Amino acid sequence: MRPRDPGEEGRAASTLELFFDLVFVVAVSTASVQLHHALTEGHVEHGILSYLIVFFGIWWAWMNFTWFATSFATDDWLYRVLTIVQMGGVLVLASGIAPAFEEQDFSVLIAAYVVMRLAMVAQWLRASRHAGSARSATLIYAGGIALVQALWLVALALPAVVFPVALGVLILAEVAVPVVAESTGSGESTPWHPHHITERYGLFTLIVLGESLLGSANAIIEALHDAESLGPLISIASLTLVATAALWWIYFWPPHHDAISSFASSLLYGYGHFFIFAAAGAFSAGIEVEIDVITGASELHAPYASLAYTIPIAVFMLGIWALAIRPNADRWVNTVVPVAAVLVLIDPVIPIPFAMTTIILVLTVVVLVWRQPAARAE
View 1 (spheres, helix red, strand yellow):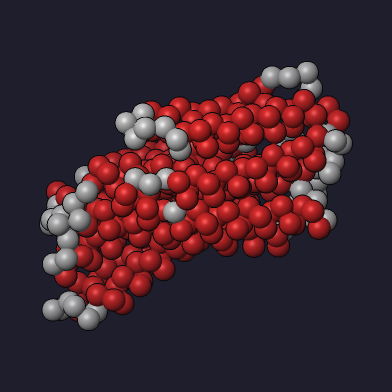
View 2: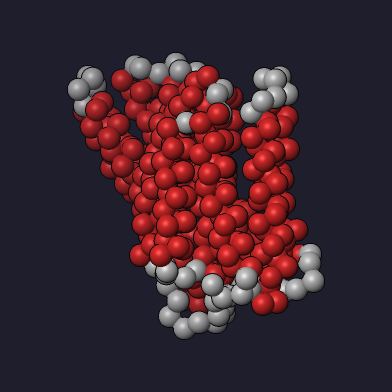
């Protein structure tokens, strides 16, 4: 397991990486469903906070594997087995999401998370044997991850009053490990392949957008039996497809590989995607809340219910603008995209917010298509 060449020609996601991504559909879908239930029952603050905590565990496990794979991926049996162990951990983690939302019981979720992270410790230790100048970084990764996992298990024994504080501290400890590993030590940092890593992020974006589309479609199909009029549901179905397609168009407009030219920029790109992924996953929950309002099954009412989907859309747009669009766009695009995000955010004050949101997104795409040649020429 030697470091991969960051300039390797034709580097693309492997079938194992694609297989690995698929199990995250289950976890993201479960988290989105629980967020929908919390919002539609009126537990807004609790639902959002629980969703962000749960999604952190999902995203962090995916991201750590992804960055490790871009540096040290092999395709032998041991690498495959350790990856499949992590996949099993994701599925068990998904089973612990409902207790975390409903009872604030994080025991199953944390146990599954620790299993995934210990598999990564084994990967880093294996990589350290032939990492060359990156050996110091690999050992810091292995030691740091192992230490934090031990602290997660200790946190389960803490009193309920103290646990939220420990949760915040340990999340900060998790995100600090890569910073320490890559910026300290006697050797070099681990290599990453810009095209490969941004392809992996793009593929995960497709997964969360696809899950949102699937969740929204299922909710609309189920609501057909309860709705007094099909008109509003047909409108939401059409507009959801257009909105999701617009978000896809916006995300893949810039050349992402240019955004990770240094350690600082790669850190910003990698960590900043938490908000993009979480927003995409929450989008379907917002659509489902809107459907519940139409069918009279929600504790939330307009215009507040509309914020459940306008906030995720706005966060998604601002996130991708800040990370990848802004450095590659002219003043037209750099004005239109953030302004459009703000307009989407305040759409709930309009009598037909979802229709207006869709119009704004379509107009944003029109501007991107118009300015594409200018952006590429520069």
